[in-house]
Image (cartoon, rainbow, N blue to C red; front, side, top):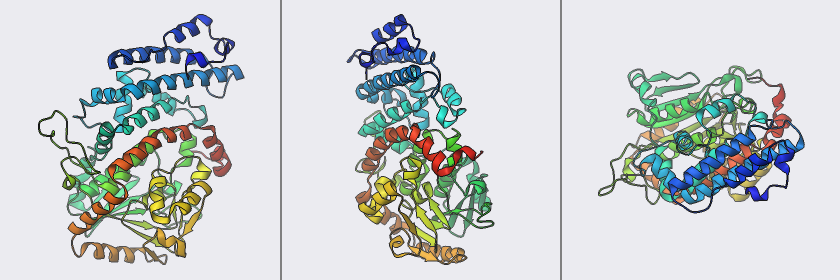
Length: 480
């Protein structure tokens, strides 16, 4: 959409002056030109558009014309961003990463781009203000982040670099690694690690919310995954839910209830949560972590992963086998984890499902991964129509490797850890890589995440999500 497509007189009816509207239209970027010239032109246009939108009432307020004008301005600005990124995403990424010589996480990328090309994406200050608004009252500025990341991931070279950058251990993981190695335990608050023999138990403990994931747990979970992968005394990682306080399940463990819908409704969970989670700790469980690597010989850029492998060759990744210990529920994001671990033990009667239809968001990379386990038709039924599986029933055998009676999880975990480690893990890691090469090479994941990045942004900012949370979650009555 361009300013030429605006309904005649709409912005003026909304109270904006004809001279300001005309000046903005005249500043629309022309196609072509160098990266630097195009960046300056689009930035000037976007800043003027933001100033116009800032004179209108916020989302959901004002007259119908004012609301329509705000939507139209946002659409035109996103169109300008799209055109710029289609032509210059590679140039922008090279400028921000020194031609892929410097690793950059996705949450660094969006703010670096906001500083380099003002208006292209929200600044940290703008996001701080946005985070203080209820989901229904947000300005919608996060969609620009989705456009940016989608265009970067769609580029083979830049996209591989971004995906691989997200597989590096976070610096904070090293802060508690010594404690874990010395004592066999590390308490990160809502996330705890305990080493038992050759296994590292990662326990998510968000008891008030049935061990849901949110903005308070995400960074700590990634830190814990890194620590398990970095500790040479740990050979197998185990994911388990902690004991909850819920009145229906007092004193019992719950594997996980997905994203914290209460904090989502109250606007505390950013759009970036989805990207950081799936490019970060979930993908690290599936692919391992990668170290810093030197520049490729004879070039000024680091070696790039090829054929789904990592910089420096396939042996540079540190990966381990993972077990999921499912008790009572594996809902949403918790169910997504079953698609990336190597062995699933579930207590009989545990419910496994993806409530994507009732939530109105994309369930991570389940659209890519779930069909491998249950087939395309059953995956569509789960994602589009809410199909559930119950551990112990025949069809759930496609998602669970073992089903045990409640109270037998500890014994089953000990037996499985012993079985996985008693003959060494060299062949296990090799087989894991071979399976992944045929199922989901890095390039396939990169392309999926490029589509996911922009589509999840649409979902996150859709009025349908708010309506679904109110209808299916009674979100208006819940407090954070």
